[in-house]
Image (cartoon, rainbow, N blue to C red; front, side, top):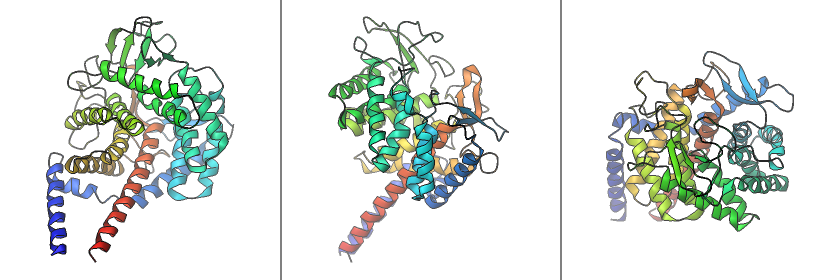
Length: 420
């Protein structure tokens, strides 16, 4: 009798899963997305990173950022570039996924390039991207006390950009077009940098760092979103009164359009804030900003660079936004209590990863992992490029999916044992 009940539950679960996937492409596509070969993706990421390692100049400063369409040549940046933490972060994920010490050595080398960020004046809000992706992942995997010291110093440096009159961190402490400098600007990307503050506050830093992160999340929630939960890229505040002056979409098509990567940062950011606070208002909000993004995706689940671009369906795609969302959805699926919604998010994440692995991998075209990302379309920058942060979030998604699969396998084993 017990086995019959278990079988009935399994049938109901499969049916619910199929219903939740019916709105995208077709049931067969979504079903096949659940059969991602994790080891194949691990091998692929490692192979591409190996190619890139062999190309990087050994000058103690060059960090890969992007490759133009049709090219095999990386464009390199130094530690001050906002993308500098993604390459060492990707290497740390490959080390975690493979266990091969050569990746630990490489990750440590490129992480070390970023050490000056912990003692220099904050150039902008991107210290989280830079330091936590590199030193943060490094400390998580090695517990190297020197890494921890850098992270704590960087968090204190990031905190110098917090404006208590506004309640958020200043994103660009310099003249940027349309930002009304010296007024206070905050961009959606900044949500990701809050993880640095949360971590530091729980690992030896001041409690005020936690409070700053919560304040930033709350003020952003109140001002950065329209009634349908789509987001503006930037809100400019009066630096004295904290009142919003204007809301713009700096890297999107128009101020009232939905810039794909901006919404991706919101999904990832509020999922992370829920993890760090366990305040369900952030989980509820993460679901709302996620749902509107998923509802507007094209059939193949890879967004155009802006959902409102007049060039659709010929507009450039943004694989980086897809990779960010895939990684975020994997985490979000583990927090959502509704089994049907959890299954939907997990299925969508797998389907996005399947599409990226099938049609967006660089393969022999260059030594990046993914093709077809869009950096800053309005400025004509990095359009249809391979961009390092797409590779980072793809590697993170592979790591997260591997852990979820292992967790589910362990749970299934317990069920089978209890009914054996």
